[in-house]
Length: 129
Image (tube, rainbow, N blue to C red):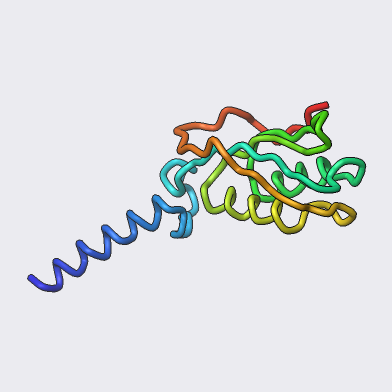
């Protein structure tokens, strides 16, 4: 009986970790089964225009298998939206906050409107002019 309880507990833990995006994805599983999909809006402040920030953001997003968009604003910031598996979105958020393009200088990154989604709204990662 104890062994069964442990197995049930382990199953629940794996289900919970999978929902958080901590568990690895098994090959052949769809994104929705293997990792919860997340959508988040972002705005990056600092020296982020005229330093290929959008191009590097698009490249990093594609490398991670994310979809969404990125654009310059009239306020001198860069904004956009990320969508994909939660673990990949978290990785991209850290990249936006700490790395960016080689010549950029990031002062602040704002993330908001974060929500779990059932399907992706985009098919790729676009630079919006």
